[in-house]
Length: 253
Length: 252
Image (cartoon, rainbow over all chains, first blue to last red; front, top):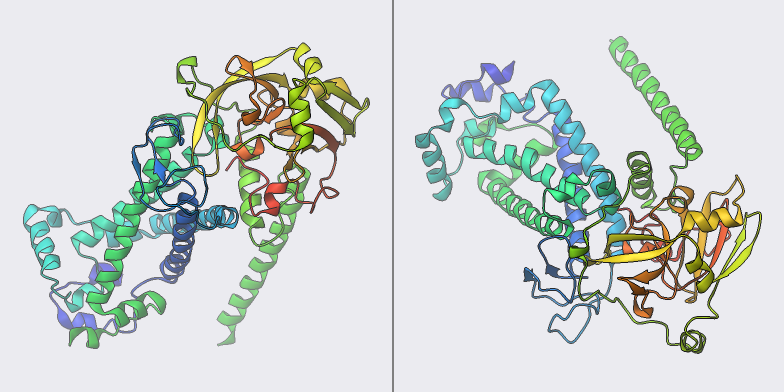
């Protein structure tokens, strides 16, 4: 109710919501579990990557085939010629096990978040952009505000602007599904049951390469996300995502 | 005043009890249907178990993708070098005529096969992808005798659950469950790309499990034991790979 009744131009309405919850318990809990899983997946993903820091397109790729591109880092295995005279310590064993375990937890968490979000109308109410916001004028204004590092108004502590909405929708409904899909497409067992899952990408190595690029986009999102939290007020935004509370009066000053 | 909180407490208690008993029943059912891998313990046990159980339910009887001849990798990739010890060198010098694959355990007729004998059985050829956990891969044509054929020859007993493989390299060993052991694409491979399986690729005999990563396709196999439990082998995790942190089940 509070969501639909709220009007940005009426400032006092903001301060009356001091005791209301900015984020539901479910959003807060799933946010931090996802954060934990993401870091585990990122670190272990890098560990797995450095055992063969070369990328290919198509079905196959190995030290005897030309690569699409190489990451100019030393490897943790001797099979790849990296140009470095040393081999890094190999941490693939636990890295792979943790990668998949964190993947499972993240998938369960994401499933819970999406299903409850759809059920509660979370995406429709807080993330689906208003038609009027999709005009070129509004978009340019928001991009301009962001590029000038203009701090958000107090009202924005309670709602998302159009760029945030589009970015979150992209991350939740495009990038995360794609990283899960490309991960599954690298599985010889999964693709034995669902060959189309890998064939649409043109092969297992293509899936691996896309998995890498989606990771880059997710890391880029994370960096911008953290930057925006800092610009908007690190303490207040962290408090909102941990306790759910927003100190409206402070936001206004 | 205490009513709502008491109701909450009772609801939470009931939910917790239902959840705990649900998990207990699920674990029992999962074990009964062979959905628990040997490396289900430890901090990564939940992840290994979820992957194995999900794959066993989703990939029942599915076949690994096969490719046209034109997609065979040329040159074939060779990972690592064959053993250099005296025993292997001597067998290699003799054209592997004295290489034996012995089968024992829960079988009606324990036996020992030469490479020549294995080649005399109906063969199966597949053009499949071999992907290493490191990230590289290649496609080759593999020829061998289906493991199920050999298991039928020796007659596996009904309580059999795993086939344990030992290789000429003590540190490399492993096992597959009966679903993979009896799968039509699981081969004891002796040929590759039309010729004998090169020593660098695991010749004279290599297990081929194309629905799992390369490390499951053990090279230089010498011994098979059919068993109902892998507890008595190594640290009881079913393979050398989990002892190094890698999943026993490598379907990913």
